[in-house]
Image 1 (cartoon, rainbow over the protein chains, first blue to last red):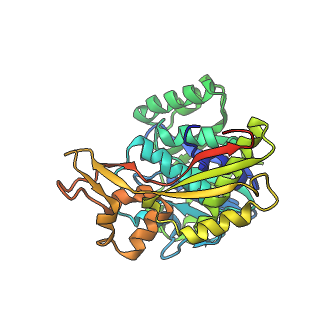
Image 2: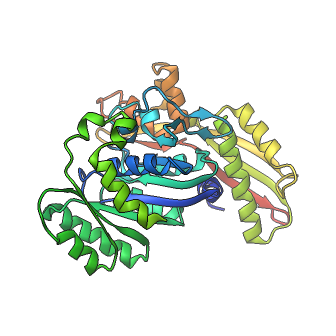
Amino acid sequence: MERVDPRAGIISKRLGSVERIIAVASGKGGVGKSLVSTVLALTLAEENSVGLLDLDFYGPSCHTIIGAGEAEPKEEKGVVPPLIKGVKLMSIAFYSRDKPLPLRGTEVSDAILELLAITIWGKLDYLIVDLPPGMGDAILDVLRYMKKEEVLVVTTPSVLSLKSVEKLLEMLVKLKVRVIGVLENMRFEENRRVEELALKYRVKYLGSIPFDPAVEGSIGDPDALLKTNFSIKLRENVLRVLH
Amino acid sequence: MHEWALAEAVVETVEKLASKEGAEAIREVVVRVGELQQIDLEVFEFALKTLVKNTIVEKAAIKIEVEEAVLKCGVCGFEWKYKDALSSLEEEVVEAIHFVPEVAHAYIKCPNCGSSDFKVVQGRGVYLERVVFNGES
């Protein structure tokens, strides 16, 4: 027989008690995906058990946004993520310690498989997955291994972001992935561009969040972060479609 | 221990393979353990022996083979062994690599040219090398 990688075989068991998996994706970087992922996790954690998995290996930032500080996963017949403000967080940053991590595609897949195979999430109502931008290994692996995932797409109204998010939507629709909707972030002017794009691909337009300069000062402080206009608008726009 | 999670993956996968093959018993399981992951072999073996109880794998002879980790630089082509780099790594770095071997790229550089663009040629992690079902030679 050929060599068999045993890790893929355990993933369905590791995610067996996870009710819903929401992957947050975008076409381009810098549209606020990690912020959306982290604030969504914190908001949902007010009434649910929630996990947050940061798969952006080149620029992990959920641990910074949530203020993970010195928190670390614990070993207990696997790896148990630390609970921060009610959110179980797993990130490669716990192991790469914020050093640059140059990885090639197969190595990204290997690291994703490893994290999925060893992380003991336990019972979760929601697992939020922060994906790196684009259509690389991370989103393809999530689609392959996390069978019940739903995707929340984030974009800014900039033409540059829209061009690449359109390709992402095209791929997701083709692959028949359940798309929760498209969220317009950092809205800086009146426009209907994101709404029209959502309409074109027959996915929900989740509404918009204006650019909020107060967010920057709240990074690392979940209580302050949840009080920003960004978080209030995110709650308004996204929570209603999740229930 | 993290070894338990990997042992659980091995047992689960062997069970799935047996069910796919319609096998009623398994005679031998060979697990290849890559040196890079610095698995505690005693714990891993104990976990395997505990987890196979009351499964189709229970009576199988389980062999664990360690594969030396070899790294090759993608820039200059130099090849070196992980064990040569091991003595210069801090304990917590070795532990981080133990959990997610890919983070080696954050801590190890080619001893010849200093690049962190290297490939793990062999000895990365845990693989099922061979499963022999009853009736097979």
